[in-house]
Length: 334
Length: 299
Image 1 (cartoon, rainbow over the protein chains, first blue to last red):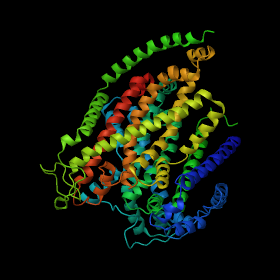
Image 2: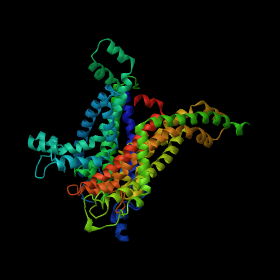
Image 3: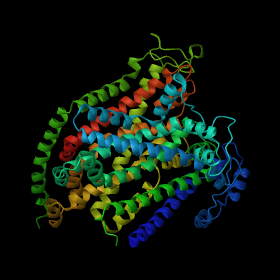
Image 4: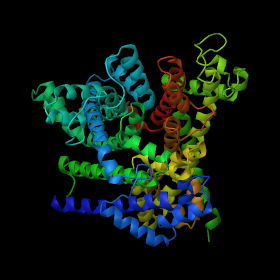
């Protein structure tokens, strides 16, 4: 197992290196004159020359890459052109908020997706299964930004049950411990703020979870249908095991491999969806930070956010692979 | 040398079952009522997009501030937006933008991705190693963030958004083609054609592409829907289609600002996206069931 873990960890390194190269090419080489883009259409030639020199863009490409690479591996993402803060600081403030949102959405998606997928498979070809499959189809086809807007309309405006802007009501103060408002409020014993933060999280988390719920339900149903037809489950029933044990212990465990894979893949969908969700609900996470950075042509921030998101995604996939190996004894560790 | 006649028998053997399999798949597809209805819905949407100037006498871009934010009425079936533009006309013309972008993105990613996958599957070796590692790197990015990075580099706009989304789909096609292609490579008639000295281009054209077609058709149909959602997403963020062009994503984004006053501005484009994407997903699923007998058992 240890050899497998080490091998898999080592494999993540070239992928992350590739990510760094891709971001460098994407933001430094392809657009042509980066200084021109940053300075804007009305900048004079002298201003562009000065900016080119300040950004080091007049140096050979490999020198630029090496400077960029050494900075990134030391955790220096440069300075925001918009706020003049270190990029790491801006990301450090925004990332926990995105993390809170994605964790909430992931939990909703996993629990609801697996439960409904198992139920649809167990009651296959009944009206319940048909209903679940219609909902899955709608969930997969519905754009996340429309889901968010509809939820705001339904539960924020027409039936005002939940707040739909930002992460806390204006004026509510929470001690900064982890940067995640709910956790910080709980850790500091501020229960009213915790309730307020949970209320603010409901609509964004449901919005972000809609697509993964549908996808996980579909995959779980399909994996369970395949497993439920296996001979060893017939044997399990024949020896008198209760149906609940057959489904939840024997069948689900054997159907867990494709489900775990899908859960891992959905983390990428959640990180992508977070950008849209944060924009809809005015949540100051990394998605909104990135959109503002693009609009301001704040390349260091764009670069920092993309590298962070890709690194998180690579690490999650690494964890999924390790979990996969743990769940499936047929995978050889050497 | 038997080179000139070598491929002929192989083609004859392969073409007959392909035709009957195609007919069988079509018959199976026709039995799937949901997929057939969805196909008709798509046909209606395509016709509506083509005939948009005839179906609506209003311009989708002409502003009339005195008519701003009007509720639905016989004069404006879906009301008007904040600039007094007819929402029905914008939804109709938005169908053109959506379908065009969906098809362009799929065409770009399908052609380049297929070539990418074929190179890895057919030639293997260094091609496979290098190109698949590049695919791994592409797939290491959450797709919207990769698309946004590309838009950040190229600047916002419809063409840039199409390029960005198409790039994010490339590795999906490359991997798909590679996985199916590796199986095709092992088939006896391909080995026979190779050993008889048939040229690579001929083998790929006559044997790989026809066998890849069903898989690619399913993936492409499903991707038209996702491409429409993804470009609409970029437009929603202000990174895709720029004003005043009618686009469902941008219309939703603008409508969100008037959600209290004019909720129809977010309903109409959202329902339009949902209908088209739902239909393309149903057609894609129908095709998959029709072309892949294994998936029928799971449906």
